[in-house]
Image (tube, rainbow, N blue to C red; front, side, top):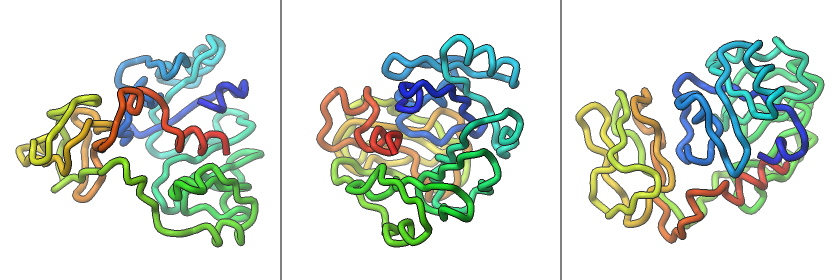
Length: 232
C-alpha cells in the first residue's frame, strides 16, 4: 500500500492458494476474486505478463500466481521485495534485481539481499537493516501483540472456514474444519483473519486469528504494524 502511494508500479506474486489470514486487506484476494480493493487501491489478477502490463497501465496493482518464483527476471524490475515471511531461506538472490529487499527473518544484507526489514518484533517493525551485523543484532523471537490469538491446523488436509472475518465468536466454538476435523476457537472475540475456503494446509500452520479487544476498524483496515513494515 505504501509502495503504491510512493508511485511505484507493482507486480505482486503469490501461491496458487495464498496463506494470508486478513484477506479483506490483502491484495492476494485478487487471485480468488479476479479483482479486489484495499483502502481505495485497486488490484487485478493477471494470467501473464501482457495482462500484468495492462493492469499497471490502468493504475492498479497486478497480482499473479507464481508459486515457484519464476516471475523474477522476466521483467526489468527496479526492485524485488521478498515478503513471504516464511522465516527461512526462500531462494531469493541479491542478483534478482538492482535492489533486493527481504522482509522478516532469513535475510542477510550483503548476501541474499541489499537490505532487510524487521517484521516479527512489533516494537521494531519497519526498521531497516543494511548490514549483516544489524540484522543479527535484531534477530529475536517473535513478539505477540497481546491483542489477538491464533488458531492452528490440527492435521493435513483441505481447510474450510465456518466463521468469516468480522464474525463474533466464543471460546469452544467450531470456527473451521480440516476435512471433517473441527478447529476450536481458543478465545472469545472477533475473527480478524482466516484462510480461504479450500486451501491445502499442513499440521501446525496458523489458519486464523481472533481479535480479543477489537473495534470494527481493526479488521477492515491495514494494521499499524503492516503499514510500518511497508514504510520500511
